[in-house]
Image (cartoon, rainbow, N blue to C red; front, side):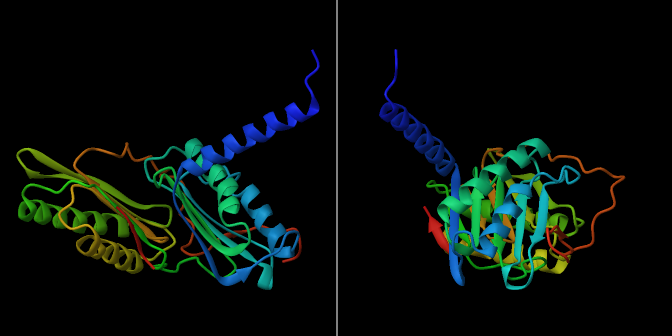
Length: 278
């Protein structure tokens, strides 16, 4: 039986659309920023971006979930940051970043600066022609909240405040491989709060503290007295729930010397505002 070429083309187009839809369905949030300008197909920036994204997760020596790389020169240089949540295993982290690299250029097809949070913030990816390493990015944040209110808000909020303060101290004091912390606290005899905070580890301890404090502050304005909240910024994110939502933190190799803060890897083929989703 010979299948007509038109039918084959339709089948391939359908399968491709399913793959794209599946990738898009995993997206928590994306932001395409026009302030740094746009690029055109086959331009130098376009080629540098594609080269960078294609090699982003191939650096197997980085097993702690943070990637910061540059490619290109001068105005066509692309700077990219990839970050996985602290409980995501290295192989899954690379898969998530590969999915992100394929998805972000579909959603932001010509913007020179773009942000993507994929798989319920399991990983995030951003790139820009400007320097983004070691910089607190407080714009383009978004929040998500549980639709249910807590029953004893005073007790709950006091316990939550203490939990978030403690987690911030732990995460900010992390080294340049990871700034991440999770813990839980009893808000009452019947209710436990589970919390998570994370910064991109290229931030200094002071800047990580500042970013997390700002994200925690947003809770009262967007999501007061809710059982669960996420506030996500490019440089840091926080989350709490009344159920456990994170896994065991992946272990860092104690024999590996942390890289210097804000010193991205670079490889080249030439010489050297907030939104609430409720």
